[in-house]
Amino acid sequence: MPNMLIFALPPELIKAAGPTDPLSAIISLPIPVEAQQPIAIYVGEGKEIPDQFRSAVKWHLPAGVTAREVAGEGMTISQGEYPMLAAAKKGFVSATEKKIKVGGVYEVARDLNSRTGGVETSGSVLVHGSLSQGVTIMSGGDVEVRGLIDDANIKAAGSIVAKGGFNGGEKGKLSAGKDLYCQFVQQGTLEAPGNIVVDGSIMNANILCGKKLVVRGNGFLVGGKVIAHEGVEVSRIGSEAAVVTEIEVGGNPFQLVRIEEANETVQNLEKDIATVTGLAQYISKQMGGMVRFDEADLPTSLFTAAEAMRQQGASLSDEKKEDLHKFGASIMSYMRLQTRLEQERKELTGAAEDGGGFYAKAKVTVAKIAHPGTIIKMATAVLRLDREQERVSFYYKPASGDDKYAEIGMGYI
Image (tube, rainbow, N blue to C red; front, side, top):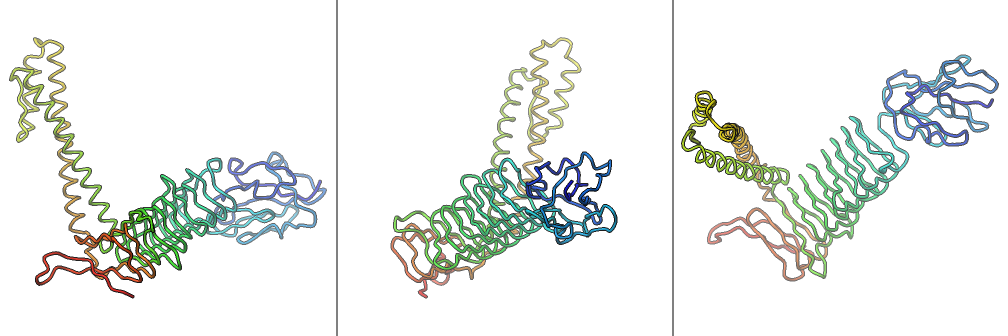
């Protein structure tokens, strides 16, 4: 019998593989382990397999490869008849073709797709391959993906590095808790409260940036919408076809979104309250004045409905009883909706007051050409380009003196 490793990891987390398959076929995704946790035992040539390991997953070592060569970073090997490979520290076990290691990062040596599933971990993540459509990574640390991210989603508490670029498709989104770097961006959404840096170009994407968006080199920005608090630096904006490209700087994008969402919620609640009010008033008329809906005194309206049921319930038809129940339920719904509406209005007021302030020094700097179709917004000022502008910087001009309105100025660089 050849030299082999017999795994002590939970069987549901590893896969049986053929004798010539790589280690990465057995440990296809990282496995969390504690310090000193056994990972595998080494059984030398000619030795009997211990009874407790007979049904465990086995891997035959290639000719000339020793157990010590298989054990990589973060691993220990005990002495004895059956040396034990164990984790030297708390972390994640991962495998390459011929080596196992334990690291502090959730490291994936392959592509992630619908078959492998996504990742959810409190630590940082490193993916050497690509992410396919529908895959999601949720990380409490940083995330780095070295292959293409294709219509997938990443949410990280730390920074995101997308070395292979991002093709967001219809639903793809990268949401970082700090900074974000990407090789190129095509469609999808990018969010980061820090800086966003793109080496290539950005096409038809939505960008929310808490600091500065920088498109390096000869990269261009065309289509979509950008909101960047401290400004934008790019070589070219828009295209000769005058594709609409919207850029807003100076405002806090995350507060603007928060205000927009709170506004939408308030409007929906007001519609729901109007619907409930109409139902309660209709039932009141149907009951012939037996109950009355009073928005200024809802507890009394609810009490009168309960009293009507208590005093006249025995003589009421089933239809009238049902109307009374609906009337009471409508009032309870109204009260719940009204409470939520008050909370959302407070949230909206707080969001407006805590908007982070307008950053008047924000600029849009274009190293080469800004094409027609570009729309630049700064606070209340809006500029729509109707002709090409070369080597230009756009900045905010507040209202002053005879100028009644704020404007967007242009300075050539």
